[in-house]
Image (cartoon, rainbow, N blue to C red; front, side):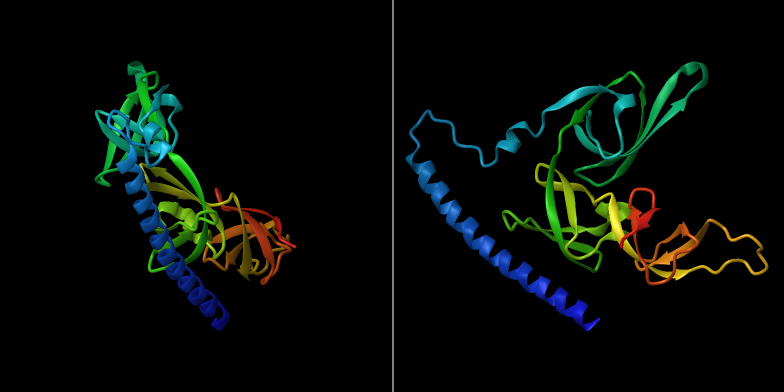
Length: 246
């Protein structure tokens, strides 16, 4: 525990120091931008701060049946992140797509229906890789290794996958106009079995799988021959056992 706390303190120190350095660098860059802008003659368009922003709002028309959770769509001038998309049959009325959406600007959830062949504007998002420094008070502190950019995002951006977060884990953020919309982790994570549920007393045949409590608090099914203290690989998408880590 002392070693873990020391590691987190070091991560916080690095985060704070890197933030200060980055602010100084941005200040210097702003000065250079101002000088460059002053030297640009009339009739010349100013340089874009980020090429991504020039194409951020460009999307593509797709059938509603092709929209998946995690996608970002535009509807009546509003931008939504798709939380869930379910195909439903409406009897003689034909098939429909029932979508649970979150308004990117307000954070409010809405439920909308689309015809399966109805055209939907799917908006492209930017995906960036980060390293998790540590988590604290329902917040994840991340850093990009190449630019040392730091961000703080709420753990709920990771959804149920937040249970697998560990210091120094590589994660990805999906952003729209620089605003984090969602976050994802690797499909495979290493966990330690904390406790294996005992077999039912009087059972004559040993079951192939048994429930096991992991060090992150999740309970999954593992082969019955595994014991407490063993490290295993787990599929973070469906919480299924993959194999021994060693």
